[in-house]
Image 1 (cartoon, rainbow, N blue to C red):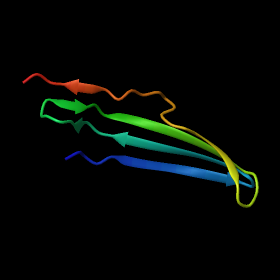
Image 2: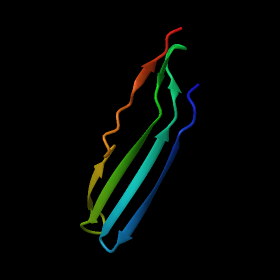
Image 3: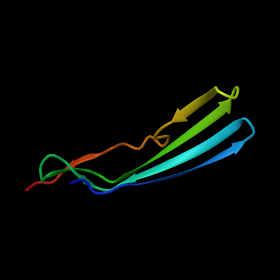
Image 4: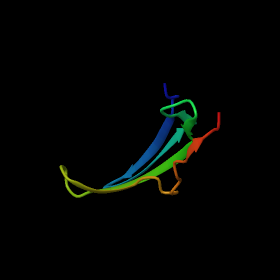
Length: 77
């Protein structure tokens, strides 16, 4: 069973503009067998939103903006 992870974020809206950020932290996670696991890592995302009208908006999302790599590790028995 994989361990829990933690996520959080915030958003700010001013008139038609909105800006937000999310952070996700993942601990060391076991893989298919007892010798493989994914190393701990943190991922940061940013989003921007512009409201065009009451029913439509234009948005951009950038995930993993720090370009942190998910590292697979293996220990020897």
